[in-house]
Length: 131
Image (tube, rainbow, N blue to C red; front, side, top):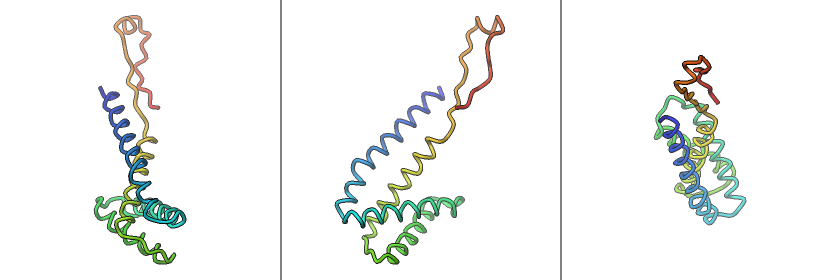
C-alpha cells in the first residue's frame, strides 16, 4: 500500500515540475532578456538554498518574505530592475525544483513479499531493504 502512495506522490511531483517547466519558466523568459533571465534565476536559486539553510525552522511565508528581500537586494546590486511578481515566480520555481530534488534523494523502502511456502521452509528473508 505504501508503495502505491509513494508512486502517486512521485507522479504528482513530476506533474507539478512539468507545469512549472512548461508554463512558468517560458513566461519568465518572455518578460525579460536572456541575460536578465539567467541572472534572475541564478539569484533565485542561490537565495532559495540559502534561505532553506538559514531558516530551517521557519514556516513558508517567513522564508518567502526573507527570500524576496534578499533577492531584491542582490538584483539591486547588479543594477537589475525586476518586477516583484517575476521575482516571486522565479523563487517559487526554484522552491519547486528544490523540493523535487529532495524528494528524489529520499530513500524508498521496499517491503518484502513473503509467501507462506517460503516461511514454512525458512527461506524467507524478512529484512527490509532501503534503496
